[in-house]
Image 1 (tube, rainbow, N blue to C red):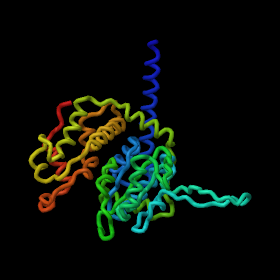
Image 2: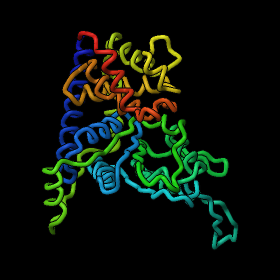
Image 3: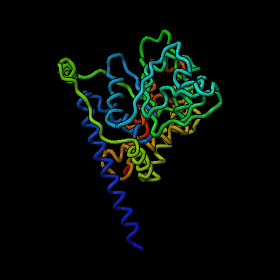
Image 4: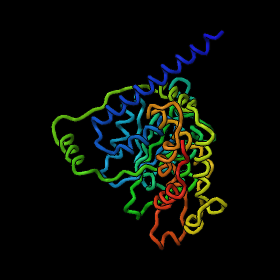
Amino acid sequence: MTSVPQMETAELKNRIDRFREVEAEIVRQVRRVIVGQEEVLEQVMIALFVGGHCLITGLPGTAKTLLVRTMAQTLGLVFKRIQFTPDLMPSDMTGTDIIEEDPHTGRRTWTFVQGPVFTNVLLADEINRTPPKTQSALLESMQERSCTVRGNIYKLPSPFFVLATQNPIELEGTYPLPEAQLDRFLFNTVLDYLTADEEMKVIDLTTQTHIAEADMVTNAAEILSFQELVRMTPIADSVARHAIDMVRATRSTDETAPDFVKKYVNYGASVRAAQFLVLAAKARALMKRRYHVSYEDVRALYIPVLRHRILLNFHAESDRLKQDDILKKLLEWKGAPRE
């Protein structure tokens, strides 16, 4: 009887080894196309291994679309892109029913034609350019992994990730994402400018006849098994408690919140923020070659998990404070306990 757990342990070790092998190879392949942006790449990969969605905020020309397409290529997943515009309708995304006539019998029947949301990796380009009606159709797909057309519910393929991009400038003609939709994103990842050396590498990569391509590393079934593996990663109660305390500290109504939160924050993060923070920390621990979650994992991902979940008031606006400033102050205010 004692050999069963040993066999399970050996199988688990093999799965962890395979996870690390695939993770290293994904990074190697993506690096052939994408220069720099280490933090962004890590966060997108964590989102994939957790099964969460990612909002990528960056200026035009910062390789947002290229990053998502390259990731889909290396993962061996079906990739589709929707360019969000003010006149985009929900049916343009979900698909629609059409009437088809049978040439033999002459009978007419409704046939469902799938839209681009039926994919593994959906790039929602400039998601804040479309009205709330279309955004809400995407919300159902993100949360329920299904879409409803004329009262019929259609399941989406598995795995399913939404990687949405938004442009922080040019706010004319944009529709800010509703809080409920923002809360569905695991991360709000910010793409910044590259360093001078990195820009030099980009020029070398992109202005020659050779076009860099990434090779396929894994497949859909294996990614689903990695998502299960991430959830099996152990986390100590003290580390989970630290994650919860850090989330609760963002709520101005909570007695543990510091004075600057009570002054500047209207609404803090929800319970979903704590769930996502712990899940993301589990994935990061595995990626960092560890078998358990540390305080460092929680704290490293605290800002990208929470920056889109707290609403600041007019005091913060008048003092020119952003969400990142408040979250950095919270990390300084509450240090990590001793391991």
